[in-house]
Length: 375
Image (cartoon, rainbow, N blue to C red; front, side, top):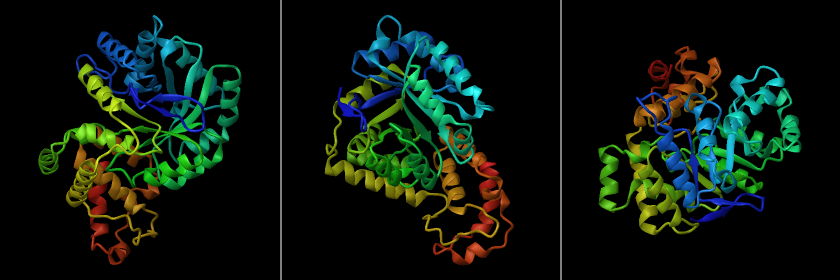
């Protein structure tokens, strides 16, 4: 296993982290985790050098943390750092911070969580937690030994990301990032911004909910002609970047664990060859070509008189339609998280944006289409 420095700390973690959002389940029920299979996978990963495991309060209907706790008995707890997250949607008053953390400690069967994150920071959650005093509470929870390093996971626009980075002396952050998301959410700009300020950057959704592992025919032809494996190359593309501290993979089978460990053992900054770099560029270009709405995010259409965030709506729509599956669900949730005035449904059909778009997109005509898909 290869290990990488974790931001400004003196810690090193495995290049591959185990994400427990997609553990194997029984009967197709997300909350019904196949515990023997999940425990076997987790312990196999740890036995082969993985020393960072990520969970969260809602994963698998709350059972991810519980199963992880079972996997870490018999000496395995001492071999890994546990990361889990405070769910802001469960917070109504400041007392909920302690209630939720203590519940998570009970689920995990431990007295200390190494890495504690504010989950899914977006415009509606960050100000609420901040104003309830979450930053001061984090320091108290560190002082009493219940948590170690603190960070946040993020799903929103890069300007908010920078605001949160600058608001506190964080140890780390967690962002959605892959080769089709370079200018989505925090993106490459956010990756570099956080790293330049000493934060470790943990990557989630390296395969975009598995979508990059199952490309359509036109994309599959590019991978086939290159002879490169799309999963390994997507991971190596991330590990090639010095700003990336570790990459989480939500693995569902023992074979995926084995393959990803093998990839991590070949990883390193500057190790991605010229052929792989060129192939990724071709794949990126093809995805852009087949994108449902050819929006370049130039923002010439903005500001919208009604307040609609036009490029963001198109971004969510394109991802949902192009990739489907988990990605469609994710982007419907992100759309629902926008203020109502920023959603496509708020369009009044004034058509002012149509004249401003250099790509000639009939924006106002597409807004109902976007809302029908995402709403």
